Image (cartoon, rainbow, N blue to C red; front, side, top):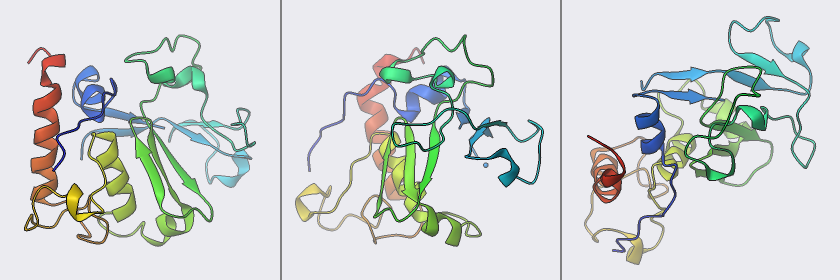
Length: 188
C-alpha cells in the first residue's frame, strides 16, 4: 500500500482545527449551511436569510450559479483567505449537485456529485457518494485496484467504491493514519 498523503494545506482536518471543531458548509460535526446558489431565489420556499443567504448573481465559467468566491475561506488553496468582502457568512466547503454527472469529485474544496443520485438518497442516513467524496477532503484516496488497498484482507470501507454503504471503522483508521502524517501542523 502506498503511504502517499497529498500535500494539500487545506484538508478537512485543517478546517476543523481552524474553526475549533466545526465546518461552515456552502447536519454531526457542527455543519452550518451558510449559503445557497441558485438561478432564481423564487425556487426556494423561503425568502429571507434564515436558512443561509441566497446568492443568484455570481456564476462560474459555465454560467452555473455559485456562492461568491469572496466568501470562500480557502480561495486559491489558502489556509485562511481574506473574506472581508463577503456580504454573507464565509464558507469552508461547497456541496455541488450536478445533473447527469458520472461519479463525482471531492477534495478540500467540497464535493461535486450527481444531482439525481443525491436527491434519490436524501432520506437515507448516509448518502454514500457524498460520504465517499468527503473522505477525499480528509486526504483519503480511492481504493479501486488491489495494489491500492492497505492489505488484501482489509475490512470493508467506504473509500473502496461498492465495498460499503456506510462509513466504517476501517475508514476511521485510515483517517487516523492521515492525521498522524499531518498532525505536526497543529499545536495540540
